[in-house]
Image 1 (cartoon, rainbow, N blue to C red):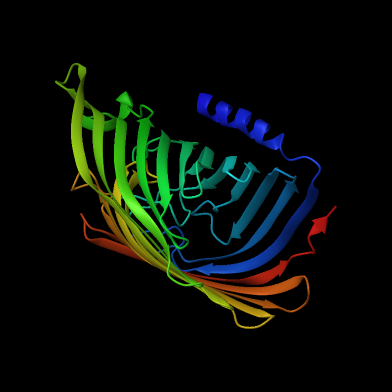
Image 2 (tube, rainbow, N blue to C red):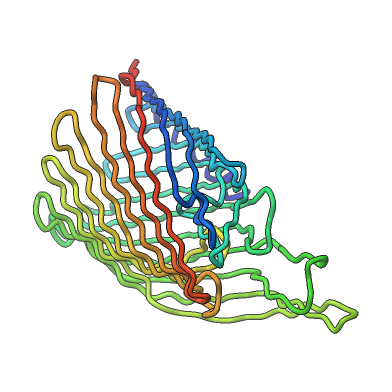
Length: 404
């Protein structure tokens, strides 16, 4: 909470630069029908549902001579034709602020989101469905400064809390904080070379329950991740950009082992170490009517179940406007996710994701939208796989942006 308070104080200083400026407010409302042949990736029996969804979102920005401040909100309300599962209702509130000058750039944001572990990015364990309301609180700050026309440095601070209304045995509540610094050199007008160092901490809340304990249980306590590497950004042409990064990380895991002799419960502190590569390569093309992106990355972060995951992911995205009234978006990725310390963990899964969205503007403020999403998940340890197909169609009203 001290970190979040520090970032809020920092945001107030950034807001001081946003004076004598302009205001704008953008909002839209959408109503959709949906069909999902396996809502929440249930296994072994599928969870076929029909339903509806209402989406409301708004974004206010105040832009001054030296900075900006804004607030963004989003609400998603679902209604399904079954009582076997709670809908994935979403409430999001985010604040942001920034301040810019010729030689520096500072920004900060805080956000709160309430959803459920049925969200597409949630990783239910073991092939089973975990349906729990979740709250996430996040604060971040970034800064960058040039010391000359070719040399500069920057930093990033992030802290996040993950909490559940009910904490089942498969989940862990945790605080995740990371701090990183980088230095960069502009070797030419089209090439930037940079070095990066980061330090992250995952601090788990104690989820031990004596009433459920039988013989022995291993629970995570605290994890520290140190990593560093080098990378470069290269503007290969006016439309094509390449970003690559390669680094090495060292991880220290601390856990608590509970065991019993039948009369007493004992606790033993346990420590493990892990290491490996962190990397990414991203290629982006921006055309007159289409943006195309391809990327590969490898990272180690906690998943939504609270387990630390070594993930390798390859992605492809397309955002195209074929005419003034018709646009299309396409996103897909394949991911291999493995527990960094436990090779028989239920977190070892393979994922394939693909989505296709279309928008047809029937008037200045009214759009007809269509959306298809495919999600496949294979749990490696018990050789169980599950998949879901979702179709969503609806109408979205986007009034003109209000400015004053």
